Length: 247
Image (cartoon, one colour):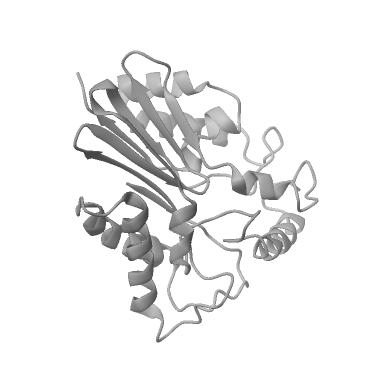
């Protein structure tokens, strides 16, 4: 599993006493237990886990707030003779197959919503007051599309979001390896254009997640103000898990 908490700009009321880190950590722990139960599909396991997190803080927090803490979710599970997967929100799963091109699964619905918000093609420089104001307004507008038909879906307060995840399975005996990547770990491929998905897999296969993240940080450090690659954060949380199933 890889979960990536969705941060909010300072000053935006989430209605929750808990941090995004608390949400991702709590959901991840509950989900780890739920996916161990093979009687539950991955969708069911995620829905049950979201509901359990709600129960843990319903008495102290306003779960009707549209900015309540949330997280993206990636899961891969070996079950019988299949590898099952679930992808919810803007993270990427790559299944390396023995006799075919890799299967790349990315939930692009959040990116689709960005196009509806009339956002400028380029953001103000990183660290500027204009950027902070733009991001606050941007996140506020996103709330109208969050966990809504025609919008984007993320793990938060609505267990039904689990039913909107991208799911599937492939024959386990065809799987060489699986990569689960937060959006901060895919920047060299999908934002900076410095590598292909095949390049990403090659780095993971040879040198592991640490090297992929090192290369990402090196690229970010070379553009500290976001002038080459327009972005909202100089660096983003980067998590990569690489699971080898066959030698």
